[in-house]
Image (cartoon, rainbow, N blue to C red; front, side, top):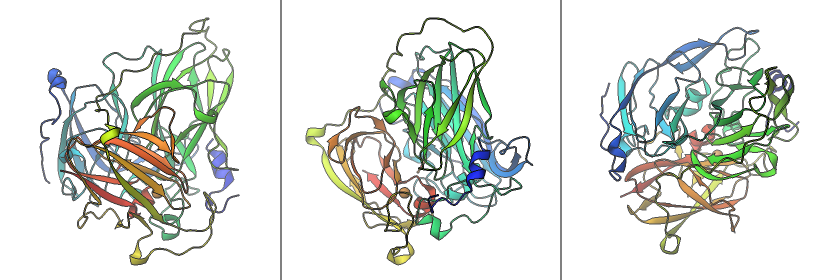
Amino acid sequence: MSSAIWVSRRALLRVGGTIAIGTAWPFGSTLKAAPDTIEKRFTAGPGRVALAGADYPETAVWCYNGKVPGPEIRLRQGQRVRVVVENRLSEDTTIHWHGLRVPNAMDGAPYVTQPPIQPGRSFTYEFTVPDAGTYWYHPHAHSAEQVGRGLMGAFIVEEREPLPVDRDVVWVLGDFRLKQDASIAGGFDNPMEMSMAGRIGNTVTINGSVPDRFKVRSGERIRLRLISAAPARIYGLEFRGHRPLVVSFDGQPLEPHAPEGGRVVLGPAMRVDLVVDMNGKPGSTAPVIDSFYEGLAYKLVDIAYTNETPVRTSALSAPAQLPRNTMPEPDLANADRHDVTLTGGMMSGMGMGGGMGGMMGGGSMWAINGVAVMHDDMRHMKPILTLMRGKSYILAIDNRTAWYHPIHLHGHSFRVITRNGKPTRYREWRDTVLMPPRERAEIAFVADNPGDWMFHCHILDHQEGGMMSVIRIA
Ligand code: C2O
Ligand code: CU
């Protein structure tokens, strides 16, 4: 077994104060037609949930409104949402709306866009959602532990014309490190793990509990929205016996296509929307296998067909492409180019292999363009780049480390235009790009959302271990 993941194989197999009001949306006026506002009250605090399933004691967690994942937010493109967040944790928190292009003041970045919400205080987030798609929310203070203990939730924005499917299903994929009594293991912010793959758990959950079976009816077409809320684990899902089609990455539509290599890969914070035709026979089952880490494959869940007669007998035609969202197209011919270099971590060995190596000076383990911010402490952060509002940019990201990094930019979606110097096939829009060890990628976007935006690795131990920076759009 690979040394960096020390979780037992058996465990894997077992799884089977301040009030601010949102500012007006700065772009265009076309979305102002839907005046209705959805209102939510969230309480972040301790709770108890059956993460490991009915055979185990309940797990003490940190969560929103007593649930893991927190309440799903679901609204229609162009609607407005107001979320009053009360902090009943014993430490500061915020909520970040991952992937949503919100005004800067609503982004939930502590010290950068708002003071952190102190224990006993609340904060009101309010914004209009410009784009349809699958997003999520999570705290952005002491992130590794707060997400690692259960603070996360789905944020779904429906298209004005939804995709014709029989069912729209959301899977929030969690990953927890549990002890034998199903309590969450301590030891967050372990420097050794921080400098390697991050804290990978031993208990993978779907919508807050270890899944057993996913019940489907023969013949139905399902839109399956996968959201990785894992702090560090990377998933590579194989839907045995099925032919899922990828219809969007990180909420952004692209040409429907079969997953590369037959596997749906999700790094931390990434989302993939699939359209799956349930073409199995009534009463049959088929497994979903996570085979991302070599030698550590496990069954995530069984797709279990009911005995009902099939919904339909002849297959539907291929799903139509979803309508594109509202991001402006970057002007590549006139884009300014900047290099972004990722460094640090244990240096010898590749991928999941361990090995000893030097850590960087100054107490940080990771850096972006030589800059490192430890433990989400953004108080003294200077931007690594200042971009001009409205201009197109290409960031050439170079992963000089031996580890995977899902790199996330707040407030924007970007196109991934090249990988290792070669044009990408789909030029997909994303908000988080998974960078394999020693690889390069170019991303392009229009810097159209003014403010200071976090730009960081979404393996939360790397984020807290220095792989965190800010990009200013002035
Ligand atoms: Cu999911 Cu900095 O965010
Ligand atoms: Cu990383």
